[in-house]
Length: 232
Image 1 (cartoon, rainbow, N blue to C red):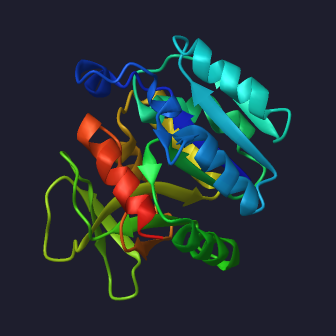
Image 2 (image 1 turned 45 degrees about the vertical axis):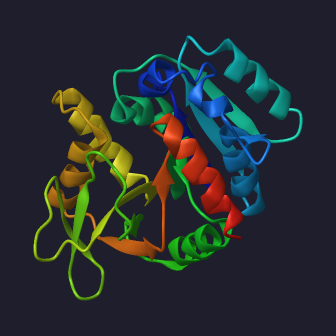
C-alpha cells in the first residue's frame, strides 16, 4: 500500500511567529517531522511514500532526495492553493489500490497508527478516517457518525451526533480519486468540502478513533508536540 504526505503549505503562521525553517523540517525529538512520518510509514509496510512540497522549499527537497537513498519516495514539487489541490497533484501516483494520506503536521502515536492501518487493510469499506475527541484546532471539522461509527456527515459546527473531529489521516480507496477529479472540475475548494462530497457520493466510510491527534500550526504547538511524544 502506498502512503502520501501533503507538505506543500507555506507555514505562514509559524513564520509570522518567528519559526524560520519550513514546517516539514521542524524537529521533534531531534528528527524533522517529515522524516518522522516517512519512517513510520515504512515501518507499516509502505510500498512507497508520495510527497508533495511547494516550489519554495529547496531545503525540504534536499532532505527528501537524501532520504531517497534509503526509502522509496516519490516527490512532486508544485505550489498549490489548498490541501485538496495538493492531493489532486498526487492522485496519479495513488490509483493502484488503497492508500493512506496525511498532512505533514499531523502528529499521532505510532502504536495507535499501526492499529489503524491494520483495521484499514482488513476493512471492506471505501475509506476509514482517523478521528479524535481531542479538540485543539482553530477550525475543527466535526464528524457525524452512526452507532457503528459509519460516517454520515462532515460539519463545520458540532451537532448531536458529532462527538469527534477529523484527525487529518485519510485511508481511502481509488474511487475517492474519481470523486476528487469531479471536485476539481467543478471548482470545489478545501479538503473538508471534498470529504463532504465523498459522503454525498455514497462512499462507505468509517471513523477510527484515536485518543489524541494534534497539528503543528503555531510555535506553541511545537512544545505541545514534544510533550505529546514524550508520553510514550
